[in-house]
Image (tube, rainbow, N blue to C red; front, top):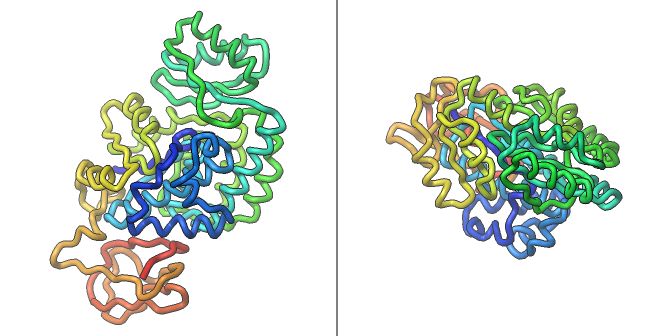
Length: 383
């Protein structure tokens, strides 16, 4: 079984979009830019580290690039059995599995970033990574420190992120080193996320969530707040709202996916932070990062082949076609709406309408058995 994972804020780097500029999947950036009202291409190509440190910029840039990489992975025929994202990455994951359209996700991420930036400006805070200390030790230090500091991310295998007031974090860092932590390092983020410091952003986020049309996901998404798989449309607003001030339970999420049968994790987006953590949490699993086109091509070869008829199998359709397989392509550019009565495994005749793009019918020029769908409802296709 294959899981897609999506990185969160802190993975961004200046110029991280440059390897993708000439790739067909770069077209996703224009859609995210248009929907969010932000020049995401500029953020991915020209923004410096200080600009990308700002919450509203970091989140949109990471979301946009993650969806570029996911679009490219889909075009190579990769399918996941389950998905998960770290903090902001959960929004990327939900978009990737069809729980919300890309444009709606972009507007939601923009609203979330703005609300969190306002909360961070009103109550300055930051986050530090603690290496080489167990969860209980870190939680104990947070309780003992004089000031506002909390566990924000349980990343597993000796890595915990704490967040809160900068002065309280300095105190906590000193205590942690006294109690055996190997390192305590500041993170390139602009606020104390997943703590009560973000409570002022809750009302604005709730309004944005209420305005977002959610759908049932193609596959389950393991949520940060409870490390449990969710798939129904009516669950997303609740888990995303709770995630704002609750710790990210990443270790538990990876452990849950492994328990459910996942053997391979593919990280789609900037950096390889999740891949490193996953390798330490799930030592028997394969974890691969795909931040650039060449890395994605290499990752495709590393994902174990599976029978695509099996639940959770890694599909190899798309551009990897056998002689007996044919691909129906888009006759126009625009948003795709699949036909409700066409499904995997179904036999169709030539001329059958399999969906619409920008109001134009997509008819199959072939007859045969549907092997799988490369596009999801609401996805913007090129001609």
